[in-house]
Length: 178
Image (cartoon, rainbow, N blue to C red; front, top):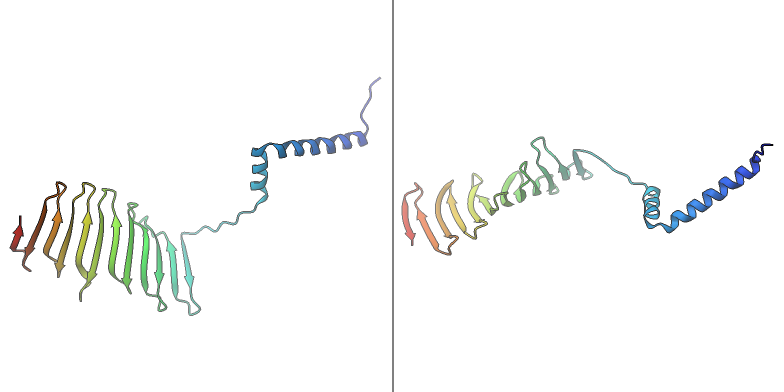
């Protein structure tokens, strides 16, 4: 004679089995951590560009990825003119810059080759005026420009030898040491 379980006994067994398995999983740290992660809802916003605008519709903050592969954060003033840029170039080199409207005034960057530099820009044509660079070998220099012409460089080589060079506006050597 075959005996079949009653629907009530199957129901009770299912409830007890669920309670026991749930109770056991609480004792297993990994299972508990997964339960907590599963119970949380994460909200994700995905985009290639975010713009934060003021009440007049001017961009004050832009976070984006241009088509060239770079990524950057731009902070703008009340008129919507770019003042600060922080980002990575298309070659993943970090950079930080200050602007006067759309004209760069100062940039700090580092390249994959280990070179770190500071560039100051000014003058009527927004040209490089001063560059400071440090190389991985310990050498470094400061170069001064006028109208895109190098006028002077002060530097220290990897072996600790210092040097200085001055040129005129046509690139002719005026003085150097050593």
